Amino acid sequence: MTGFLPVGWLPVVQLLGAAQGLFLAAVLASSRANRTANRLLAAVMAGFSLDLAMAWVYATGFDRGAPHLVGVDFLTPFLYGPLVYCYARSVELGGKRLPERAWLHFLPFLAVATALVPFYLQPSAAKLALRADPGASAWTPWLNGLNQAKLAYSLVYIVAALRVARRQREAVRLRFASDRHATLGWLLHMLVGGALLWLVSTVVYIAGRALGSNDPLAGFSDVVSILLAAYVYAIGWLGLRQHELPAVPEEPLRAPRYDRSGLTADRVRELADALDRLMREERAYREPDLGLAPLAERLGVPTHHLSEALNSGHGRSFYEYVNRWRVEEVKRRLAEPASDHLTVLALAEDAGFASKSAFHTAFRRETGQTPTEYRFSVRQGRA
Image (cartoon, rainbow, N blue to C red; front, top):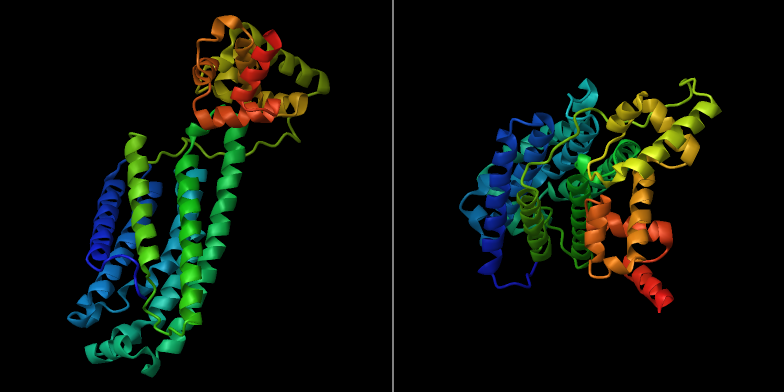
């Protein structure tokens, strides 16, 4: 497809993106921590690098001198979905070994790879003929059908991985007062970026077909190449910004079940009141990394009993409960003239919030206003 960048710039972007992806893949694969999750993510990065390198091959015409490379990247989209989904599941399982049946997700890739063996074993002249005149090749209809299958296949795995991320978020919030105890940021960034790439690729494919293109190997436009390179760089930048590779929780995150706990309604209320006293008297909510298990230990009760007391006695998850106390402290201090010289963010950090986004979300949920709007209304009331 005709690009919107000068031809000299696009190959540079593609090669730099491929190099960044390989570097990140090497770092992830060599990490001793969270080996399963990091190696899966390394495989995704390596696949992106291959796609960007092949985009450079096609954009520069290098394939004319190396026709054996034609179609090398055709299989990678059948790997992305299973790899990202298995990465999400590895995060959810706390870095433990994936179930043995996880390999079944890669059966479609193996089936397509087997079916394409005759294509890859073709003479160089046949591959060059496909590049020169796709309409004259017997492979073109079949390969175009696989292109459509790639889009549907990828969408299924994006939806499945998003469900895992949502399930993980709910489980984290039952046990922690901060989202940073899990790789939610990494996982959601990957999935949102992947969804965006899928959407753009789908639009480009449909537009190409509508304009009469039937080249099954012309999968990259300038837009897709640049977005993919930016995506790879963004993942690398996020890793450097967090000062560590993606980390998974130490144990599986699952929502507890209360149907066999044996707690009476009176005991639930007693535990809920004891937790309220702890928050009120010791201001435990000010600890940014506060967890349910340490609080249960301080109260001398099992973790699942305290979780039940929260959900049954207060109707909130642990995450929501602690953030409500934090919001109440910020509201109280915003109403005090002595805090007028402090920024809203400083007050939020003092109250235990670990991030600006979590604070703003919790504050608006509890008050229906932004922190700035609330401060303004309080000051107006004082005047």
